[in-house]
Length: 180
Image 1 (cartoon, rainbow, N blue to C red):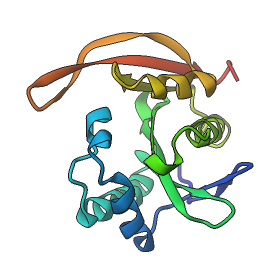
Image 2: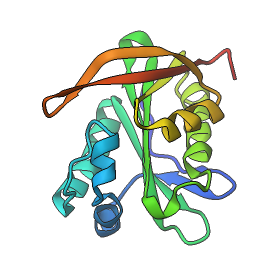
Image 3: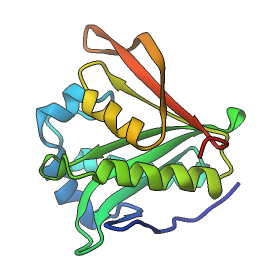
């Protein structure tokens, strides 16, 4: 399977490939400790080299068809406000959904809007069977996004990841292509 980056448009957003000119804005949005506390892979402090790494990861992920990373942009002015991706597991025809939204843009429905669009894309364009997502126990807001995106809560993954010296339980949500 091979695809090129496409622009996915919603009522208020454009999802497309992150680019080098986004680096400063990405760094500014993610350089808050809360992102490190609520996610597995976002470090704190967050640097421009971390943003460069993420952009390069988007290019490599597309080439290998292992991870499709999209910038989330406001349609009105093309400002990057977050990121969303599908970590593809070809063998099982499924993908893990992950996203982040910059703090100034929280509680406006952008994560839900982007998630719905990427789920639709995963099923219609990539012919995936299943899309799932997880969140730490202390990130209930992310669980609400997953539910509003059409996913169903499936259960708890005990000691699923380790951050520092602490094991993290995750709540898992999922949706299959025959549920949309």
